Every structure is written in C-alpha cells, then in structure tokens.
Image (cartoon, rainbow, N blue to C red):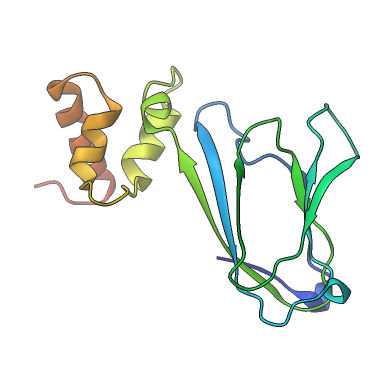
Length: 154
C-alpha cells in the first residue's frame, strides 16, 4: 500500500518498475482507493511516451477510487506520480517472472523469490516454486531455501 501525503505535496519521480537486472518484474497493477478525487487534487499517474528520456506525456490518469490500471513494468513504460495536495492512497501489485528471476546468473533473484514469493491461487507456494525450475531436485533445493529464509527448517 502506498500513501503520498498531501501535506508534503507527495509525488514519485519518473521511473520504471523493473529497476533491477536480476528481479524480472513484468506487469504492474495499481488499484486506487481515493474517494471523491478530482483534478484539483493533483496526484495523477503520468505515463510517458516510450522514447528514452522523453518528457512527453502519453497519458495522465486520476487516482479515482476503484480505478485499476495495468501496465508493463519495463523500460517502455516510464511513469511518475504528480504532486498531490491531499493524501493519496493506492495498492500496487507487481508481477514477477519467477522462472527468469530464479535463473538469473547473479543469484540475487533466486534468493528474493525464495524469500518473498506469493503464489497466485490456486497454486501453493511449493507448486509455484516447482514452476520456476526444470527438475524436482532443483525444486526441492529452492523449497528448502524458502523454508530457511522463513525460519521453518527443522
């Protein structure tokens, strides 16, 4: 959950959500929770055109309650949150490509997936881990890593 405080003219500068080379984020979903929000409140989500360092807005979206936006978490979807003048609330979900993250050569993606994976129902955590790897042996190793990261080892 994110809160941008209006008293500080909260904002989030231009960025992309896939900001690391080892955790392969793919899609971002944002659900807005702001009742009675209008243009006068600011806080728009601004999507820029895909050109490098573009300052041209492709789209501005008001963060109105129950509005959900989905966009690629890649370099071709740079975005920002403009200044707001009242508290602005949103829930963000970023979907991660577990298979690519687990296989990342530096190993940091694997450690993060084993610590933080939240599977999409109806999958269990172990079933989701099994989908990230090629063999049962590799799955068992990653499941053990995940359990150790959560302090669940025997």
